[in-house]
Length: 260
Ligand code: DAK
Image (cartoon, rainbow, N blue to C red; front, side, top):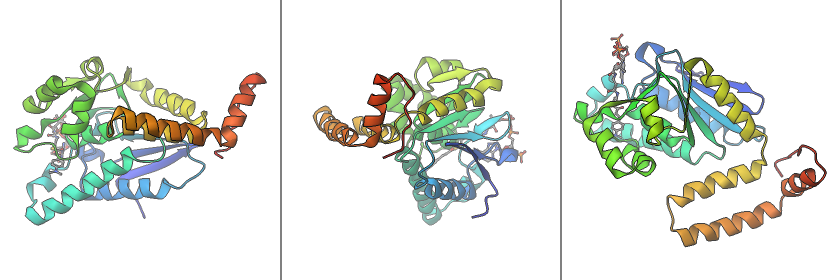
């Protein structure tokens, strides 16, 4: 697929996906969603990748939301397709076999905030502004915001954010747990790369399983989750990487993991 609205760039084991619809503040129209879906689907089976960074082009926006021009023209039928496509993308990112870091370089509003919420870790520039302004447009959030944001910040703050539709600074978003770290804007991508490389250096099977288990913590009860952890732990014990990781520690050297 020839991408017009995103770019993909490999830096060794890290893939950087950038939404490049800068003239519309990277708002997600159906083409952006289709291209992101294609990119995540295509890289899913890439055995040499260890981490993904998702960001927006330019200094102003991560993603300023779903495309309001497109929203304006939706009918019952096209609205259903619109909903299905976006939700599928969010599910793809959340269940992607590798960690996905959102590098929030500016506005992350509505569907853009929800895109960041579907990622595993949210790093924000100090200039970023986040929010779920859908109610201002007579809409409720539609790409999982009511669920994922509530789990992150708690019921009261989630209500405040989504019922007022207000915008929050990166510092405030960090204080309430909406984003995980805040950096000076010009350091954001370096910090994101450093974290991605740190993740890339860990045991790949263990990283993959850990992501699945943490996600499961929000879906299943504690007993079932701990049972899943037991099975996953046993699985890691059967990998070459566990032998390599533990032996490397005992031999006081860096581990050379092989993803096996
Ligand atoms: N869609 C389309 N174009 C957008 C846009 C958006 N979300 N955000 C900005 N743009 C465009 C502007 O129209 C403008 O285009 P031109 O006029 O130059 O052609 C250009 O980007 C630059 O924007 P501004 O001139 O407005 O820039 P400012 O710096 O003055 O303001 C802003 C920046 C981010 C405060 C402002 O642009 C703004 O308020 N944008 C809208 C933000 C917003 O409301 N986002 C949430 C959209 S609603 C659902 C699933 C998902 C959703 C709903 C339902 N279901 C499954 C049911 C999601 C809904 C949303 O995301």
